[in-house]
Amino acid sequence: MVLRAWLEGGQPDCLRVRILSSIGPDQAPPLAVSTPEAVHEAVQSWLEQLLIRPDDVPVTPG
Image 1 (cartoon, one colour):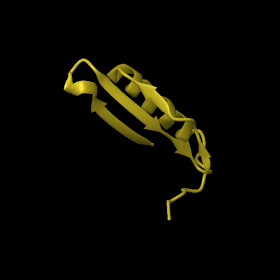
Image 2: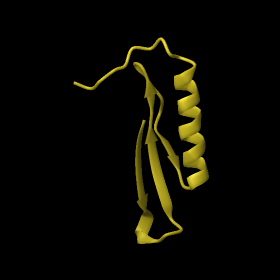
Image 3: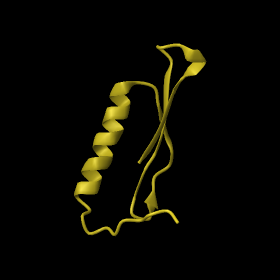
């Protein structure tokens, strides 16, 4: 999982986060969120999916 976060226009209330995630060779479409709660939900969901797929072989970019 890769998170890219920034404040749009430098304003503290303008959080933007792009989330790229994959488990094994399966990459999900990019997700864009704008609240800490949405980021937490996306990370928690990804971790739960990872835990139910323990037989996956890690994929390391070359």
